[in-house]
Picture 1 (spheres, helix red, strand yellow):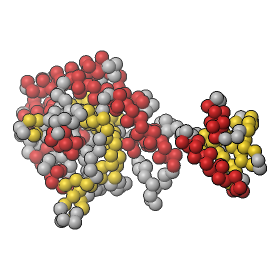
Picture 2 (tube, rainbow, N blue to C red):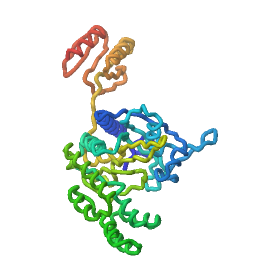
Picture 3 (cartoon, one colour):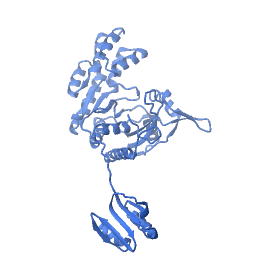
Picture 4 (spheres, one colour):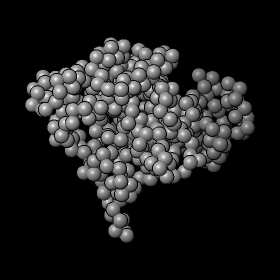
Length: 407
């Protein structure tokens, strides 16, 4: 992945930033049409804010700094936690918010990318099929806006696998190994691994089937019914079916698949979880889910669902699918002038910019040639404006602006 930030170690240019900015503007526009308001959080947060939420951000991944008072701070490693806390403390906050912010984590991967830009939404509302489906539809809608036609949103549920694990009473150390095997869909090693554990045969068979519960929602639902162990799992499956029914009403069924083998290390997810993939990008370009138990204020939970796009992954996907169209728009106007006409030419450029035109100015002796919709010449005692091989003279700014507006 190519991170898009200008520094000595990167090969990025102005066009890359324009593509990235247009992408972010597309996300902002779509988020807004669903009623979301943009907010931001502090770049520096208290270490305790994240330490108080075990199972969320790995402490070893936080980038820590010490302020002048000796307090341990961290560069923002996550956005959901500070936004959720802020919302819980302030009941007047808007229930639909979005952000475009950088997150910072110490990585141990080959690219060692510590800074990433995320664009995401948080929707603070009760757990209903309608609220869940609306958020999923927003993700689908946004990916379509960007021009992707070959993407899928994988939908799972944090509770389905957890229920099976509780039935099996697997020790944490063994559970960690099992999670790795399921995440990698290593069906060859799962069976012998489970056979070593003291698990009832029906539950063992159910766990073995988890990585295979992927694909067409109707097929997955049919297979999942065969391994359900209790009423909780039955209720979870009903919830997924209801969400899928609403997505069909949105006519988004072609863009979603079910993946009950989707397990996430972010333990705060409590319900539906999902991730989005586009062709030729090996990592999910978005991840999200429902987190109803993350924030409890005055014994009251703050139910919510949200997701975040990885902006740089999206930019890479645009490039790979030839969707990153570069725009070479010429300037509105370029003004060339003799030095003794500099005062008039610069005054004219000021007035035109006040009117909203993009204007470039050059003394004639610089021999600059710049493409523009209009070219103005201050030469001798003449003031000329040219467009499409047609030349007209003008006497002052008002006259020139009138000519431009009548084009």
